[in-house]
Amino acid sequence: MTDTKDVSLPVITRRTAIKGAGATLGVAAFLTAVSPLRHRLDDISAEEFMQKHYKELSAKEKVEVIARLEEETFDEYGAKVHIDDPAPIPGTKFVYAINLSVCNGNGKCVEACHRENNHDRATNQSYIRVLELDKGSMGLGSADSTYDHPVPAKDKFYMPVQCQQCDEPPCTDVCPVEATWKEEDGIVVVDYNWCIGCRYCEAACPYHARRFNWKKPEIPAAEVNPDQGYLSNRIRPQGVVEKCHYCLHRTRKGRLPACLEACPTGARVFGNILDPDSEIRWLLDNKRVFVLKEELGTKPAFFYFFDK
Image 1 (cartoon, helix red, strand yellow):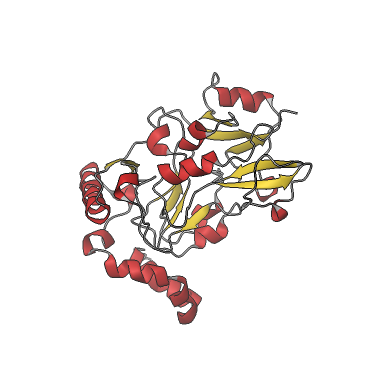
Image 2 (cartoon, helix red, strand yellow):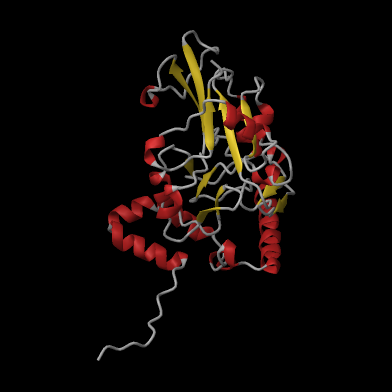
């Protein structure tokens, strides 16, 4: 006779996920993959390591976690910061669009992202890459993202690429500990305190939109952006994956993304697609827009168009 008693499934924690990943990859490959994470585990406090998943934290626990992070930021960087946790705005789905007829490759969006999101100064990291392509071509494989000549160059056009905030994000599906997920307003986020640094999400993203922190970010105290969000631009520790979050610490408070404000050509348009009177809604209804790698079925919430 079949035993029908309930069998409890094991609870997946960061500790069990690390153990499971090691068994899957093999010892040598796993140790190579998580070498930066080993350094993080050496420095991480027991309190942080045992912290619940963001979605499981009570309001009181979030206040305590944020207070700890603010204190740690001051101790490590000498900067007083305010970390907020703005919730998605009901009835909102944020989308982005870029006018490729107007973008001239100046890179101001890249610089603004670097400063706004407290990226490591030595590596000059950013969530945005601006690709230089030949006019009439969409060969992304041959695009140049490291050009250093005056722009715009003759017979070239420019395409900024960042997280596409997909409606079917492959990155969230592969995370073994659910450290990354899509929020109600369309933004794909990461809980940096829960991420184990396996980089599966980085490998799954077809847009090269995720970044791995190989070392602890170095930022002078005077350059730290003190206006921070728990799920956005707070200083990330070594050994975690990070990504664009549509500056949710700004956009969920009615402000625009830093990259849009910095664009000198007006190429960027951002807003709530559910608002029928918004500029972004008009643009999507009236322009011939396209998305990157549509054939993959990721359903990006990031659009491109040409005026001509």
